[in-house]
Length: 164
Image (cartoon, rainbow, N blue to C red; front, side):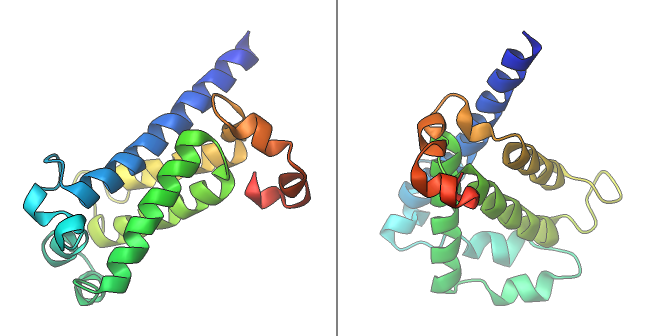
């Protein structure tokens, strides 16, 4: 019973994290009015990273992150990253690559926002999400509630375990 509960938890955790990233992609692309107003949507020429990189960044790396503001390559990399992470985690395919990409993106956001964090000397929600990405990676979370169980058994994934 405990093992089934753990598998269910890992599957739900993976899907939940995937939907966070997938929703961020959709909201920034189409300006659904949650974090992104429709007039600032990427689909109508807005920059999905400019506001954050210009206004929200603080700490010792602020100058570096400010210099990235408004660069098209940064917008594209960020948006493709959100989409890739969201799809891999939501559907349970390539979860290892998706969790690595998610941890890297979250680490960059941690460096941009959290040094020092507001309410703790070094831990904030980005740090916790990075740990969750590790749980998804090492827990083989793609196997539960999704396409991962079939994906894991393909010859390609059996040969290249990083694609699991």
